Amino acid sequence: MKALFFLYEGYVDWEISPLSYMLNVSDVEIKTAALSEEVTHEGKFKIKVDLNIESCDPADYDILIIPGGEPAPFDKDERLLNLIRQFDEQGKLIAAICGGPTFLAAAGVLRERKYSTSIDDNPEYTHYFNEKYMSETDVTKCENLMLRETLILNLL
Image 1 (tube, rainbow, N blue to C red):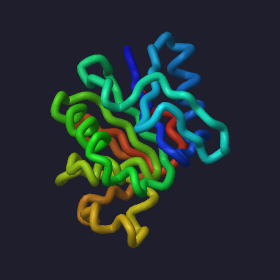
Image 2: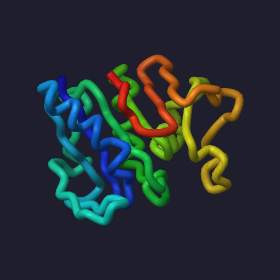
Image 3: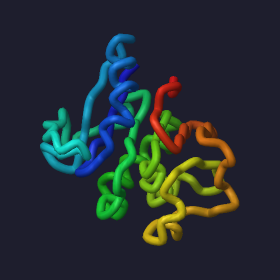
């Protein structure tokens, strides 16, 4: 199995750290991608990523994982939105946590699918979400999407 973590400025590192550890010890190949060569997460560590987003091919991965954090201004970046759309079109797993589902909503892949997020009530992002499909649970699996309001531990 191969996993691609999309990292961005201000992503919340502790939300995905346990998952990345568990995947590593399970012999899952992990790559990181971003819109730039280096990002700084919420804990203020600078992270050099493996790949620039333009060089990512969803066919090479089984899952795309997007941590939480402040989506703006990345929620409008077509490179990211196109990558998400490609993963979805290929039926690949996409996991997003906290503010991460905002990217899925911005890419149009939530459509009429149930979702979980903790950012849908932020006025800056409410236009992305259709409240009718908001799940009543903290964790929602809908087709190839896995969405969680908080820390992803039981993803796979």
